[in-house]
Image (cartoon, rainbow, N blue to C red; front, side):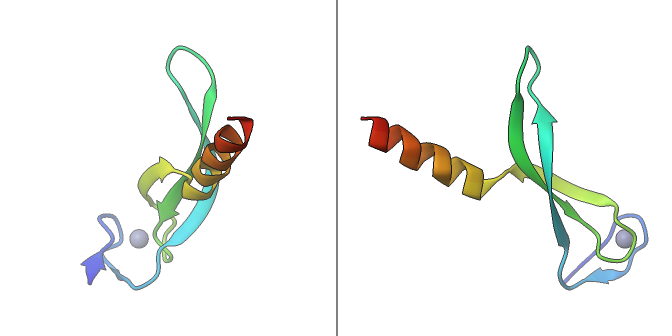
Amino acid sequence: MFKCPKCEKVIQKPNVQAVAANIVGGGTLKSIAYTCSSCSTVLSVTPDPYALKDEIVAAIKRG
Ligand SMILES: [Zn+2]
């Protein structure tokens, strides 16, 4: 178990929210933010695995 760094409550299931991360130099990257279920503090932001999967499948289909 781990605790939120802000409210210090135990986080059983963090919330996940879709966000668009700005890429320095231009463009955006479909990403997801993990947030505390109690106070909504952002715990982590990472590339959206589903968006990455869709892009890989599309690239394979293009050949
Ligand atoms: Zn919290």
